[in-house]
Amino acid sequence: MVQASVKKTSVRLNQKLAIFGGTPTFGDKIYVGRPNIGDRLHLLNRINDILDRKWLSNGGKYVQEFESRIAKILGVKHCIATCNGTVALQIAAKAANLTGEVIVPSFTFIATAHALQWLGLTPVFCDIDPHTHTIDPQMVEKLITRDTSAILGVHVWGQPCNVEALSAIAQRHNLKLIFDAAHAFYSSYQGRAIGNFGQAEVLSFHATKFLNTFEGGAVVTNDDELANSIRLMVNFGFAAGYDNAMSIGTNGKMNEVCAAMGLTGLESLDEFITINHRNYKLYQQELGGIPGVRFFTFNESEKNNYQYIVLEIDEKITQISRDRLMQILHAENILARRYFYPGCHQMEPYRSLFPLSQEQLPYTNCLGERILTLPTGTAIIPEDISKITRIIRFVLEHGLSISQKLS
Ligand SMILES: *Cc1c(COP(=O)(O)O)cnc(C)c1O
Image 1 (cartoon, rainbow, N blue to C red):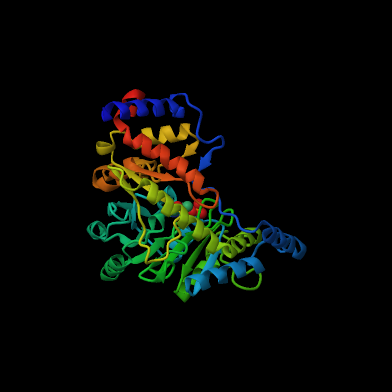
Image 2: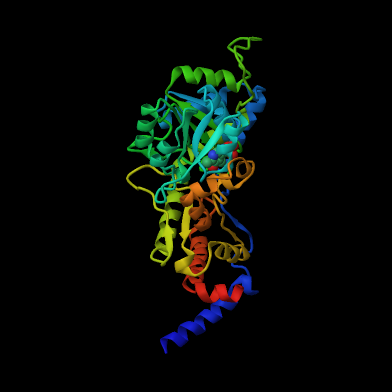
């Protein structure tokens, strides 16, 4: 009796899914990574001032103010703002004199690996801890060779790496330690802000990140000498004054309009956090307890920016794959994303350069097949989350019958 009625509703709801010809839940597409935008008038006032003062780049007033605000918020000595996070990674790696091999997770955005490869360094891909999704310190130690110069950890989802273990390994083997903190602005580790660990940490302020400057990034460090080198490198190696290059540099400068956007965003930081946290709790509440689904949770006794809502779908239990679920959501105009699929080692040039790494990264491969990130940020309201989670819940609770119908 119960069985029959469950079947009946599921058939009815099935027909309503857009993938089966129903009307999409959302008329407009809902994206992962819609930008958080602060007070528009404040931004426009700053841009007007920039135009009035006719100073658009080259360490202007707004870049200086942005750098000192970031440094103050993180409690770090130096912040050097850059044109984006990728260039910041390249500059940090070069300024820290990395050579040969650098151990890095494959479960990250491709820019982490590209920044190294671009400099002629060799990224050596390391597996992750399946619980935290960050680089596995035990495997790091096994990958160290005579050519290893550094470890580049990534605070994936803003969840800090095991900084303590990595620092101990770096110290023991005399390696540099740098962090890609592109996701981790505002996160803390053992009560201390991310930005204070290793030789340097790299932030991204890309439009999709928690705090954005349209495009932008920064290197933050407590090392005076390293900060000096980075400052030179960001601006062609030019020292103070005119016409005096001290060393090889590039153009990695942030411009004034980007800094104005960053300063405007910083004014609304508390609001961004509050909304992200509200969204996170709603998703958690609505998606809790589904067999085969892990909702990635953050340690709430630390600071987090909650910029990613992350699900792990175990197809063996849900009987519907992550890719099918994504297809269904896309049909509903919910553009959930597979961050980071495939792992860096499965993309070129790394797939050809390091064919063996395929077998050495079981957790990265497994997670790459399971992960789905959902829309959040200030563009998402609670009603959106109710609609999104209702569909996800329905699909996962009827995994087998929907899978069969789709195949
Ligand atoms: C976004 C991102 C970057 C690159 O930052 P850009 O500012 O886009 O160049 C690097 N690493 C990770 C993990 C990222 O998510």
